[in-house]
Length: 437
Image 1 (cartoon, rainbow, N blue to C red):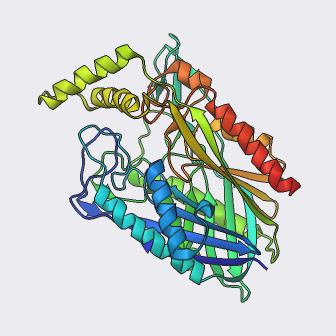
Image 2 (cartoon, one colour; image 1 turned 90 degrees about the vertical axis):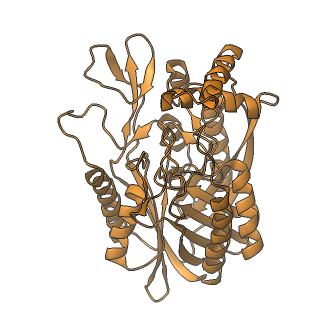
Image 3 (cartoon, rainbow, N blue to C red; image 1 turned 90 degrees about the horizontal axis):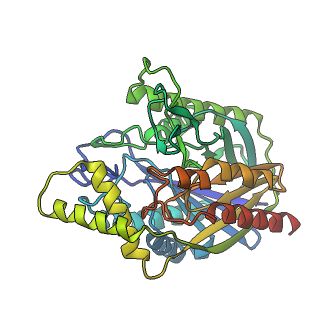
């Protein structure tokens, strides 16, 4: 039989520490709702996999390597079988170097590594024979956020009432996936669920919050008991909680927004649980591959302009936060990748019964996930994102041509124009290998 273990741990940062929100410089004044790390461990025969969901915006690649090594040392699970993902909440600690005037919180990183080792060790120690059920449904929580204009430019968000608005750049994917495990006495061990959108309701706020995935977790625990609940985001690079074509007279409050998305997510997960068929001996397999990909660099002119603007910031001049961000991104990209414009992406493929799960470490644009699922040999396929590192956005060619935030060449939007298709090709190969095996 398959064995499953799970555990949870609170990972709040201290008051007065910086919050991630990229273009703002806020600090933690209060904890609105707890940030958590939830771990789910599977073992069948010689195959072992640890899935970890953290309420952080994402984890830089070098930090992801260090964290999975810490987990491996604490648990005995091979490091390359440890998949640590961020939910992408923007109401969490400063994890990524997206703000020129706000540092990454290295002290928090040290605490997070210890927490992850602890919660994973508890999950492995709790492993016991189990039954596993899966389901795929539909829950619309995300909307395409890339807006196209008559002059050929695109932007992330925009007023679609303007006469020069010509449509949205890409599709949406309302797929909702869930995995359930219960022990032989019928007690639920854990829930993992997945949907695709940006948990940015508290962007610019001064409170720690798990955003709408936290609301969904609370609702599921109210219904199912105090079990570990994992949330994995998806191909949400061009997806947000806000409908760009909605009636502008209706403005959701933050609470309304996270309640809407969290309730929809939790409700569909409960429906899938109600209809789930549990197996004691599901097919279980894992494959992992590192994909070396090209990085696109900014033009020398763009870098020179960026350095000049940031020099003015260093001299004390007050400059708009978005202008600072649009200068910091190209400069950081040139500094870190200018001499060697190559990045390495870690892809994982899991088979759990008839469910195929593909994880990738970027903010993938939605179209690529649809392509992966179309080429999958499985009857059910889910594409999870921001897992085993975060290498920034992976836009389509249309996104890169249209430009704007997440389309232009920044440190956090650095991948070459062919990378999305290469992820699709490599993912299809991995999944077919699992099914042939």
